Figure 1 (cartoon, rainbow, N blue to C red):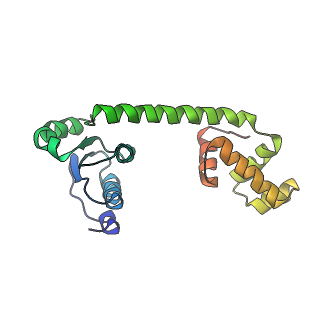
Figure 2 (figure 1 turned 60 degrees about the vertical axis):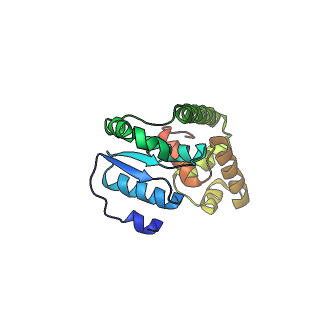
Length: 182
C-alpha cells in the first residue's frame, strides 16, 4: 500500500504490533502514525534488515519499542514480543546506548540555548513579545518604530539563539519555558 493509504487503514486492536521494516520510510511512518492515533498504548516492534543507525533513531523517536533483524526474529521474536508487551524495549544494546547519548547531548544543547535566553538584547526581547502576540513582522516593526527588515534580523537572531527554525517552534519553546523573553 502507499503511504497515504496506510494513514487511514483500519488497524485491529492489539497490545503489540510487528511492522515489516522493509517498506519505504514514508509508508512505515504513516502506518506508525495510524497505529498511534488509534491505539497509543500499543507496543511497536519493527523487523527489518539493513537498518542504519539513523533509521533506528528515527524509529525510536516515532515510538518504536523493539527492533529486530530478520535473522534474529526467527529465534528472539517471542521474547521480544513479551518484553515489548510489558512496556520494555528490545533494541540492540549499541543502538540504544548511542541513542541515549544522542538524546542527552541534544538536551544539553537545548539547556545551553535556554541559558542564552537571558542573553537577549532589549530589542530582541521586544520583538519576541510581538511574536508571542502573533504579530506579523510589519506589525512588530510599526509598534517598535523600526523597519520590517530590522525585525527580520532580530527574528533570525532569536531563531539562532534558541536553536529553532520557525516562529511556531520559537513561540512553543517560550511557552514551555514559562515566559522566556518577557
